[in-house]
Amino acid sequence: MAAVIRTHPMLLQLTLTSFVFLSCLRNGNAGITSTFIRSEYPSVDIPLDNKVFAVPKGHNAPQQVHITQGDYDGKAVIISWVTPDEPGTSKVQYGTSENGYELSAEGIVTNYTFYKYKSGYIHHCLVDGLEHDTKYYYKIGSGDSSREFWFTTPPKIDPNSRYTFGIIGDLGQTFNSLSTLEHYMQSKGQAVLFLGDLSYADRYQYIEVGLRWDTWGRFVEQSTAYQPWIWSAGNHEIEFMPYLGEVTPFKSYLQRYATPYLASKSSNPLWYAIRRASAHIIVLSSYSPFVKYTPQWRWLEEELKRVDREKTPWLIVLMHVPIYNSNDAHYMEGESMRVVFESWFVHYKVDVIFAGHVHAYERSYRISNIHYNITSGDQNPIPDTSAPVYITVGDGGNQEGLAGRFRDPQPDYSAFREAAYGHSTLEIINRTHALYHWNRNDDGKKIATDAFVLHNQYWGMNRRRRKLKKHYVRKSLEQIAIY
Image 1 (cartoon, rainbow, N blue to C red):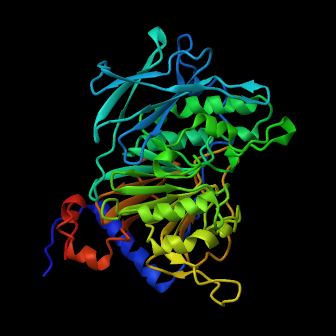
Image 2: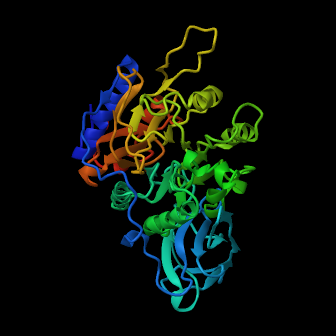
């Protein structure tokens, strides 16, 4: 007999959505192509005199402040900032009480040139030895020009650690970008999984390329100074511009945005992994060599073996180019990476793969195409309960605009697709369940345009039934009927 308790309306809706999602997966039915018509702002960058690009007051005041995870397990951060006029100090003062900076760490400073642009002085400081689940206050700069911020470390590595990630891709610096950022900041997101294509500075020429990196850093500081953004690189970070004499890929990005790649034994900051709360997050580089025997391929082969689903049950992969995409924009561009890595994703039961690149939103069912080769007849993706869900969130708001043309008919593997600006959140409840939302900017922060309950791949259906009460689903999901 069912033990029925009161059901929260939103969670009931998500449960029903999950049931439909799984039913369609079994039956192989195509999903929904939204007919929503956007009321977006023009796809042009915000004017330089707008307040979102304001330079902090004071001589040589730190600006473009951003933090990211600084180690493998979430007990360190890398704090980065720029001083425009002179190097100044690279010291970070920090502590657990406001204005009580009893600790300090010393960073490094660098700068670079791009054509005739000369950057400010870029500081990166590793602050390690932190306690989990603790709010820290920090201060950078000196004298009257110093600035103060705060951040909160994640809970300890534990299979039932509750945590909420925001997911943003292809952001840029338009009014649509600002809408996305403001909507995300009203959510309960605690860290951002960023899917590449940051500033779109490469759409400018000459010294404006560098200047638009500076404006973007000031634009996103309202979020990046207070919570970690987990970076991945896209095509707009390549900046291969021979006509300017600039032929070093990712030059600006690598100077400005540090990653903790050494902590995961990576040889390159463009691909790396972290563990945060109950999640193991793998960042891949779509624009670095990844075929067999390359450094990225060898690294991923070893990193997947290091994943311990007993400690971090949620396995999440980030990349820029989507493997499954039914939009005319960038159609089939992810096929080469799919051929190389998809069998690993299925074998290791990756829960979800987030990508950007396509300026629209799309979510797949759990499907795979691992049996296809040039001689077999199995050329179509098929339902696969061991496969990830593939989600494209390339709709941050950049100046290139939306990708509004989806292929017709909608493929069977595509569950939901819409050309609108927005962001996603993934709220991990415990080791078995997570709540996923995609919010379009037009609807405000309260309305989820696409939402479902994501069931963990490792803690499968049979194990989930046996351990439902033990792992606090009843408590965490707030009054769902339990059978």
